[in-house]
Length: 221
Image (cartoon, rainbow, N blue to C red; front, top):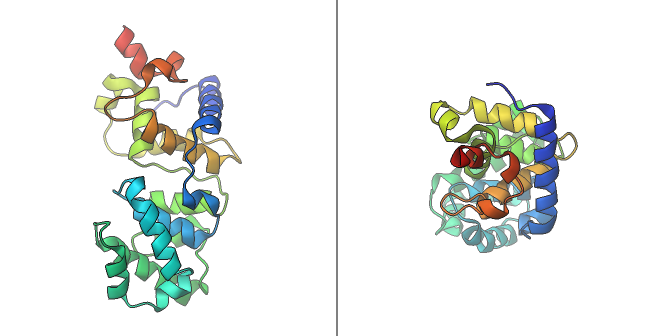
């Protein structure tokens, strides 16, 4: 895929970060840079709405405040505490990650992408989230919200219909990432997709990307 020209990338970065400065959500996992807490939030947020995650996240950390506490717990107890978030393989994987991190890395989650992805159940997105949100690395993330924003703004419906697989979106996410601002930029992308560029009722008339959004341009033509 041909990447957007540099001026358009900079325009998107500036507008998204400005939007985030006004509309950012106050979420408990954004008040910490501790890798374990970031990991817990990211695993919980997989296929689960933010409002359902918040109380369970706080309860989980009261019971298991560190990765060593989680590693020492019985997996059955972890699964019971996880209820009713659903997708119940997640607590099993999180428990396995904790045990392997204690065994192999002395209880410290690695900041290297390859090492993170060798842990049970950690894929490219979760590895990027831990690296960006806990360690401040320039790592891209790609979830459902981010994919929708990138597809609408930079591809438009015709090009989007021809996309197969995730490579196009990962390439875009990495190209758009402003060096040194991965934390705010990635959080902004996810907030923008979750609250503004939504699946059914996007706020196109007030959107800061309206002037260069490929989907708006297609609709107007």
